[in-house]
Amino acid sequence: MLEAVTGVSLQDLLLVVLEGVLLWGVIALRGVRRNATAYYDARATLKQREWLRLVGEEAYHFAERAYGGHESEAKRYQASRYVRDRAEELGVELTNSEIRASIERAWLERQQPMQTVKPS
Image 1 (cartoon, one colour):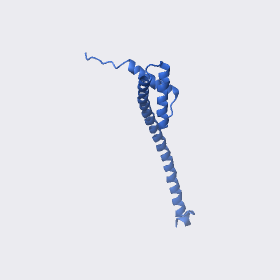
Image 2: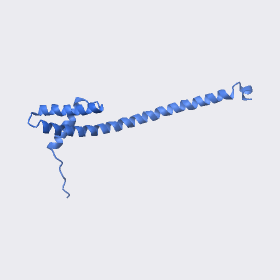
Image 3: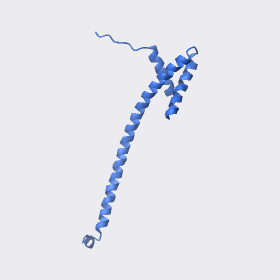
Image 4: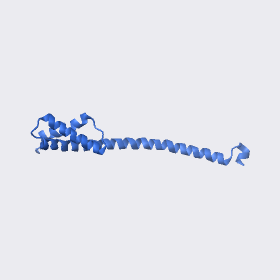
């Protein structure tokens, strides 16, 4: 009856509605994907920074024990190599600056132990 009045079959009308719902679903999923990607990137970066800090400490202690009698450049090189090897094992990409900063942070923390605050 609808076809006789408008020239459009019920099947055609349902297909148009279904296409509209699918289009809306695709658009909604793109938004969800964008938000999920941003969340994942932020969490991954935070976890990677924590991992880098821990590996930098390991590298510093490794270089101090294994190359304690050598000059500082040799120890820094060995520590950098240690971090780079651990990163390659996990497929983590790091810049030389990030590696050096993690090792120097560990060195600074070792040189300046935490100061305790006395209650007043």
